[in-house]
Length: 127
Image 1 (cartoon, rainbow, N blue to C red):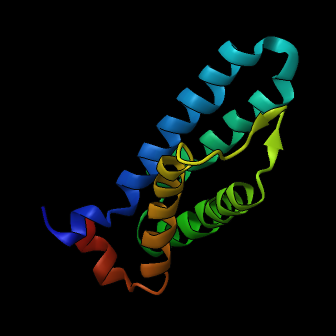
Image 2: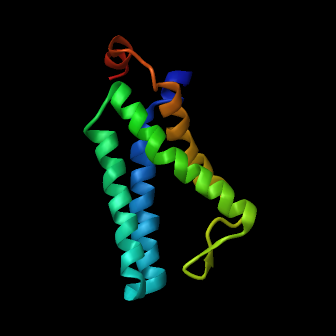
């Protein structure tokens, strides 16, 4: 496995989109029920944005979307974990459970920052 496959923005976006829909939408609905439909709907909307970035864009555009969609969520997890914040009455990012979401949100953000200024010849070779 080479570095280019580890830093593949599209793959990380698909991973986080699937996880966001499964955990953010599915598991939240099972755990909280219909009492928090607004929050669950927000999770679904974010999942749609992530799928759009992964499947409907490429190259520099995809890298920039990954950075601006995933970077702030990574920072949010770090702040929530550091301050012990709650969301809907539950810890938002309890340690050590928060490490996996930080990695999964951080990787597409990192890939996006690294590909922010890629030129079109680089992006066409990634496909």
